[in-house]
Length: 214
Image 1 (cartoon, rainbow, N blue to C red):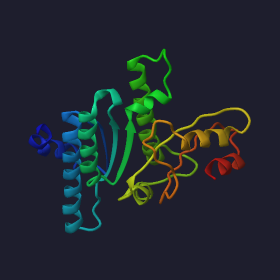
Image 2 (cartoon, rainbow, N blue to C red):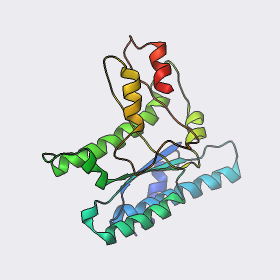
Image 3 (cartoon, one colour):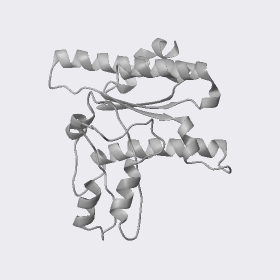
Protein backbone atom coordinates (compact mmCIF):
# COMPACT_ATOMS: atom_id res chain seq x y z
CA UNK A 1 0.00 0.00 0.00
CA UNK A 2 1.02 3.56 0.81
CA UNK A 3 4.18 2.50 2.69
CA UNK A 4 5.41 0.42 -0.26
CA UNK A 5 4.83 3.35 -2.63
CA UNK A 6 6.74 5.70 -0.31
CA UNK A 7 9.47 3.28 0.76
CA UNK A 8 12.29 5.12 -1.05
CA UNK A 9 11.32 8.33 0.71
CA UNK A 10 11.04 6.53 4.07
CA UNK A 11 14.47 4.89 3.60
CA UNK A 12 15.96 8.28 2.74
CA UNK A 13 14.97 9.43 6.25
CA UNK A 14 16.30 6.38 8.09
CA UNK A 15 19.29 5.19 6.03
CA UNK A 16 21.88 6.86 8.29
CA UNK A 17 20.22 5.74 11.53
CA UNK A 18 21.80 3.40 14.05
CA UNK A 19 18.48 2.51 15.61
CA UNK A 20 14.88 2.58 14.42
CA UNK A 21 11.76 2.44 16.60
CA UNK A 22 8.60 1.51 14.68
CA UNK A 23 5.44 2.35 16.62
CA UNK A 24 2.03 1.40 15.27
CA UNK A 25 -1.49 0.43 16.20
CA UNK A 26 -2.07 -3.06 14.77
CA UNK A 27 -5.48 -4.12 13.48
CA UNK A 28 -6.23 -1.30 11.05
CA UNK A 29 -4.91 -0.86 7.53
CA UNK A 30 -2.15 1.69 8.03
CA UNK A 31 -0.17 0.40 11.01
CA UNK A 32 -0.64 -3.27 10.18
CA UNK A 33 0.37 -2.75 6.57
CA UNK A 34 3.14 -0.18 6.96
CA UNK A 35 5.05 -1.45 10.02
CA UNK A 36 6.27 -4.75 8.45
CA UNK A 37 7.09 -3.03 5.14
CA UNK A 38 9.31 -0.46 6.88
CA UNK A 39 10.91 -3.11 9.13
CA UNK A 40 11.65 -5.32 6.11
CA UNK A 41 13.19 -2.41 4.18
CA UNK A 42 15.37 -1.51 7.19
CA UNK A 43 16.53 -5.14 7.50
CA UNK A 44 17.32 -5.40 3.78
CA UNK A 45 19.21 -2.11 3.87
CA UNK A 46 21.23 -3.46 6.77
CA UNK A 47 21.90 -6.78 4.99
CA UNK A 48 23.21 -4.92 1.95
CA UNK A 49 25.50 -2.83 4.18
CA UNK A 50 26.68 -5.96 6.02
CA UNK A 51 27.72 -7.72 2.80
CA UNK A 52 29.50 -4.65 1.52
CA UNK A 53 31.53 -3.73 4.56
CA UNK A 54 31.19 -5.70 7.81
CA UNK A 55 32.34 -2.76 9.92
CA UNK A 56 29.61 -0.44 8.70
CA UNK A 57 26.65 -0.03 10.99
CA UNK A 58 23.36 -1.84 10.70
CA UNK A 59 19.97 -0.46 11.64
CA UNK A 60 18.83 -1.98 14.93
CA UNK A 61 15.04 -2.15 14.59
CA UNK A 62 12.60 -2.23 17.52
CA UNK A 63 8.84 -2.60 17.06
CA UNK A 64 6.64 -1.07 19.76
CA UNK A 65 3.02 -1.76 18.85
CA UNK A 66 -0.49 -2.03 20.30
CA UNK A 67 -3.17 -4.68 19.76
CA UNK A 68 -6.89 -3.74 19.50
CA UNK A 69 -9.46 -3.67 22.32
CA UNK A 70 -11.68 -6.76 22.61
CA UNK A 71 -14.73 -4.65 21.67
CA UNK A 72 -13.13 -3.83 18.29
CA UNK A 73 -14.08 -7.32 17.15
CA UNK A 74 -12.56 -10.61 16.07
CA UNK A 75 -11.73 -9.44 12.54
CA UNK A 76 -9.53 -6.56 13.70
CA UNK A 77 -7.80 -8.82 16.23
CA UNK A 78 -7.09 -11.41 13.52
CA UNK A 79 -5.64 -8.71 11.23
CA UNK A 80 -3.50 -7.50 14.15
CA UNK A 81 -2.20 -11.03 14.88
CA UNK A 82 -1.27 -11.57 11.22
CA UNK A 83 0.44 -8.17 11.15
CA UNK A 84 2.41 -9.03 14.31
CA UNK A 85 3.54 -12.35 12.81
CA UNK A 86 4.78 -10.51 9.73
CA UNK A 87 6.44 -7.73 11.75
CA UNK A 88 8.24 -10.20 14.02
CA UNK A 89 10.07 -11.65 11.00
CA UNK A 90 11.90 -8.37 10.41
CA UNK A 91 12.41 -6.54 13.72
CA UNK A 92 15.22 -7.28 16.17
CA UNK A 93 13.01 -6.76 19.20
CA UNK A 94 9.21 -6.58 19.47
CA UNK A 95 7.23 -5.07 22.35
CA UNK A 96 3.45 -5.59 22.23
CA UNK A 97 0.92 -3.73 24.36
CA UNK A 98 -2.69 -4.99 24.09
CA UNK A 99 -5.12 -2.08 24.48
CA UNK A 100 -7.39 -4.50 26.37
CA UNK A 101 -4.89 -4.39 29.24
CA UNK A 102 -5.69 -0.70 29.76
CA UNK A 103 -8.66 -1.97 31.80
CA UNK A 104 -6.12 -3.16 34.40
CA UNK A 105 -4.97 0.39 35.11
CA UNK A 106 -8.22 2.26 34.44
CA UNK A 107 -11.26 2.86 36.64
CA UNK A 108 -14.87 3.87 35.91
CA UNK A 109 -13.85 7.54 35.70
CA UNK A 110 -10.93 7.05 33.27
CA UNK A 111 -11.88 8.72 29.99
CA UNK A 112 -11.24 7.01 26.66
CA UNK A 113 -8.58 9.57 25.71
CA UNK A 114 -6.88 9.35 29.13
CA UNK A 115 -6.62 5.57 28.76
CA UNK A 116 -4.74 6.01 25.48
CA UNK A 117 -2.52 8.64 27.09
CA UNK A 118 -1.57 6.08 29.76
CA UNK A 119 -0.58 3.57 27.07
CA UNK A 120 1.33 6.23 25.10
CA UNK A 121 3.15 7.20 28.27
CA UNK A 122 4.32 3.63 28.86
CA UNK A 123 5.63 3.47 25.27
CA UNK A 124 7.29 6.86 25.59
CA UNK A 125 8.98 6.12 28.92
CA UNK A 126 10.15 2.72 27.68
CA UNK A 127 11.72 4.15 24.52
CA UNK A 128 13.24 7.07 26.43
CA UNK A 129 14.67 4.58 28.91
CA UNK A 130 16.63 2.93 26.09
CA UNK A 131 17.73 6.08 24.26
CA UNK A 132 18.68 7.93 27.47
CA UNK A 133 21.11 5.12 28.32
CA UNK A 134 23.08 6.17 25.25
CA UNK A 135 22.64 9.94 25.07
CA UNK A 136 22.30 11.13 28.67
CA UNK A 137 25.57 11.20 30.61
CA UNK A 138 25.34 9.02 33.72
CA UNK A 139 27.64 7.44 36.28
CA UNK A 140 27.66 4.24 34.22
CA UNK A 141 27.36 4.92 30.49
CA UNK A 142 26.40 2.51 27.73
CA UNK A 143 27.18 3.00 24.07
CA UNK A 144 25.26 1.78 21.04
CA UNK A 145 27.27 -1.45 20.87
CA UNK A 146 26.04 -2.39 24.37
CA UNK A 147 22.41 -1.74 23.42
CA UNK A 148 22.87 -3.70 20.20
CA UNK A 149 24.27 -6.72 22.06
CA UNK A 150 21.14 -6.89 24.24
CA UNK A 151 18.50 -6.04 21.60
CA UNK A 152 19.77 -7.50 18.30
CA UNK A 153 17.78 -10.54 17.04
CA UNK A 154 16.07 -10.97 20.42
CA UNK A 155 12.41 -11.47 19.47
CA UNK A 156 9.69 -10.58 22.00
CA UNK A 157 10.58 -8.21 24.81
CA UNK A 158 8.95 -6.37 27.69
CA UNK A 159 9.35 -2.88 29.07
CA UNK A 160 8.41 -1.53 32.45
CA UNK A 161 9.00 1.49 34.62
CA UNK A 162 8.69 2.08 38.34
CA UNK A 163 9.01 5.07 40.61
CA UNK A 164 9.09 5.13 44.40
CA UNK A 165 10.15 7.18 47.41
CA UNK A 166 10.70 6.61 51.10
CA UNK A 167 11.95 3.42 52.67
CA UNK A 168 12.67 0.48 50.33
CA UNK A 169 12.22 2.86 47.37
CA UNK A 170 14.77 1.03 45.21
CA UNK A 171 13.14 -2.39 45.55
CA UNK A 172 9.61 -0.96 45.23
CA UNK A 173 10.52 0.84 41.99
CA UNK A 174 12.24 -2.25 40.57
CA UNK A 175 9.27 -4.49 41.43
CA UNK A 176 6.86 -2.07 39.75
CA UNK A 177 9.06 -2.04 36.64
CA UNK A 178 9.05 -5.83 36.21
CA UNK A 179 5.32 -6.27 36.79
CA UNK A 180 4.00 -3.94 34.08
CA UNK A 181 0.24 -4.66 33.85
CA UNK A 182 0.02 -3.38 30.27
CA UNK A 183 2.21 -6.00 28.65
CA UNK A 184 1.14 -8.96 26.57
CA UNK A 185 1.53 -11.82 29.09
CA UNK A 186 5.32 -11.84 28.95
CA UNK A 187 7.59 -12.24 31.95
CA UNK A 188 11.32 -11.90 32.50
CA UNK A 189 11.70 -15.67 32.95
CA UNK A 190 14.24 -16.94 30.43
CA UNK A 191 15.27 -13.44 29.31
CA UNK A 192 18.56 -13.49 27.42
CA UNK A 193 19.40 -9.89 28.21
CA UNK A 194 18.19 -7.00 30.36
CA UNK A 195 18.75 -3.25 30.08
CA UNK A 196 18.39 -1.36 33.36
CA UNK A 197 18.19 2.41 33.68
CA UNK A 198 18.23 3.63 37.31
CA UNK A 199 17.73 7.32 38.03
CA UNK A 200 17.87 8.84 41.50
CA UNK A 201 18.79 11.89 43.53
CA UNK A 202 22.18 12.66 44.98
CA UNK A 203 21.27 10.65 48.08
CA UNK A 204 20.86 7.37 46.18
CA UNK A 205 23.19 4.84 47.80
CA UNK A 206 25.37 2.10 46.34
CA UNK A 207 23.31 -0.47 48.27
CA UNK A 208 20.07 0.85 46.74
CA UNK A 209 21.44 0.51 43.21
CA UNK A 210 22.56 -3.04 44.00
CA UNK A 211 19.17 -3.94 45.50
CA UNK A 212 17.26 -2.55 42.50
CA UNK A 213 19.50 -4.31 39.96
CA UNK A 214 19.22 -7.64 41.74
